[in-house]
Length: 459
Image (cartoon, rainbow, N blue to C red; front, side, top):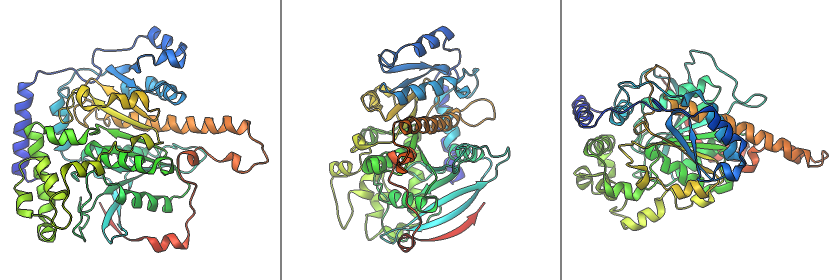
């Protein structure tokens, strides 16, 4: 938690930004898709329907993707979504206010968490927080006829557990998911037992965590959601694992996709200073443990996110590397062509942290790769997407509805394939989950020897 002085400074900076920027309408305010336009879009063929790779949606949003049967299924689900309905104008319209509400306001109702510490191959520790309650409005069945799906949530790279992450977990719990939050080494109370932190786009720790989750739930579908800069970790994992990934579907909320350019260009000073201060506070408790690996005096004197990242991971005492080499190893899009899992990216055109979409979003990726879908909103800030009513952020609803559409699409695809196979083949009836993941793994004694973990309970 940031000190009250830092919180007050950030709030004053937010007020200054709000006064300097004219108020805008809420997400989708005053915009709608006419019924006859939607009927014409549905009646067109897939090639004509996605002629310009951009399809209008309710609420002033648009979907950018490559034409495919899966894209049509997702488009139909989004057009039926009540979360994208036009919203009335409110005081939450400004992008800076939405962003600061997301990162600074208290998290609200704190879910009940069951924490597990997973010991990694190099004796490091990561934490998994399983959300086990509360569920005020009762659980709904999401995967009827099958096991409840697991939802892996990856917070931002700074280790800040935001109110929207916890809100997504509570909503997912209500919808019948098993949410689990992944915490990196040294983040959110996870002890740093070795002088090694996780680089920006290194998915090695996440791989071990996902393997353990599959060990605990070998037959349950696994979905993944990442927030902000945490999306680099998820995209790196999907790219490195390719068709061997255990994940069925993924979503990224306000992802940072062109990471190196993002670090080098810098952020508006309130965000740059705020994120940098939070990282310094988080690592200050491990200053003595890091003295043998990095120049801690230079690290804590850093004045920019780039200088902090470069000092921490490039200018190490044991194995220094160049800034270019670092991004060759950690660019989240380095293996993006190998990804074989549907990924929905939800972004805002007024994002004050990522910047204008024309310069920060690789639209050619969404127009050429059939697994990547971009939901672009006119408003929403950075990871905000808030509404004036007490309901969760509309991005949460859209993500869970898209996962439901993916589940139904893959089930229907397997059903159609089953009609053309011989009924005598037992393997012919396997679910689509195996097509996008490794084959189901059953718990065995050798996996028990790989993992060692401790469990503790928190509020």
